[in-house]
Image 1 (cartoon, rainbow, N blue to C red):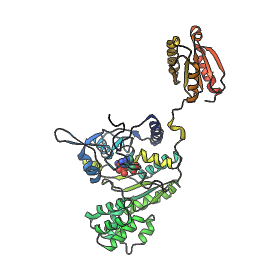
Image 2: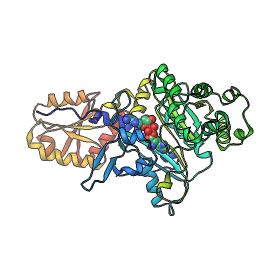
Image 3: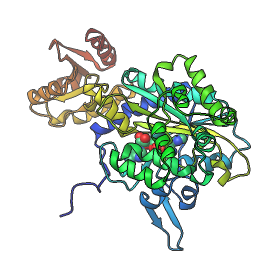
Image 4: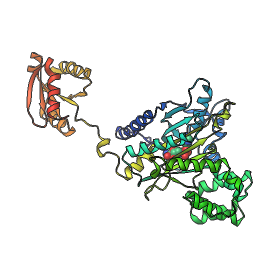
Length: 446
Ligand code: HAM
């Protein structure tokens, strides 16, 4: 016999799980569309090269599912979709109205060690705005995040958006730490790995990467700071060129924009956030649970200025984020923000048809069709005899209205309608059935 389990890191999605996913995705779609983002979809397979170009070597070399074609062509099961988004936008760049506001909820694949919040197959909500260079795009994306999480009932005490800017880190490296440009990536790597390592391991990693005490100490400051002015005060003799840099100005301006907005209390600067994907160039951010339950970021994103350059001569900057649906669910469950009964099918609105014997079978099929035509869900109990069992099943399911059909009803073209709560029942003509159902629904406050 074969195993009944799915492959490691993959999940069978049962109807009860699907209901939770739908609850989450419906809200995400609703909010995306309130901001006028349009839904799109991407192919599951792509040439590996477009992911190799600017994502991360870890993602492509260690975490990807690869399909080899006969001709030696290598295809990747999408580990994320931002490079594909860039490809699609580059394809229709001329005709698309800017800014482009799009969202998608694809299944993605990463060959990771399955652990809390991490699977090999996972759903990831993506929302991006392209062709809007000003920091208002950042502000819009942060508003979307706040709207999503507060709509689910979360408060600012439960989550924070931590933001930083890669160009700011570049400026710190160049003008304050005097690190050569080819080593900027190492600074990102070190900062990105910092929360995935034990303290001692981290120290060894930093010291190995930079054999210079000033830089090592500065990396610690960058890792830990959540106050831009304090961070800068901790360095001596910062040259003017630093304050004139695009990175510093962008970060400071974003901080000001946020301070003057309604979402100030949801956002904090954090110089330790750099993100692990190579295509980010400016603002980067990660959203964290502020409690102790979920240590890793719930989700994250950032601005990418040159991702389209692998497909086109046109430059188009984008910013957005990817959110694992599982991480969102874990976060919401931590704070009891998923309605308890969401996993069960709600039968309270379903009309349950019971029968006295088999002779009425075609009559009840016709009856059920007329009810469904009115967009009212209904089902037939096929046990036909034993009315008592049928009604008690309806009760167990939480049905409020049942129909009882026997030869008498069939002969006279009638239906007996039963209020399962008061146990009152009434026989009405077939034509008056829908009226009776809606009357009973009113009585039942459905
Ligand atoms: P990422 O940081 O690689 O960014 O993934 C974003 C989010 O996807 C993670 O924070 C997590 O919520 C979820 N995620 C990632 N890997 C897994 C996994 N193995 N299992 C479950 N959930 C996972 C990106 O993917 C960027 N493309 C996001 C983006 C969009 N940036 C700009 N636009």
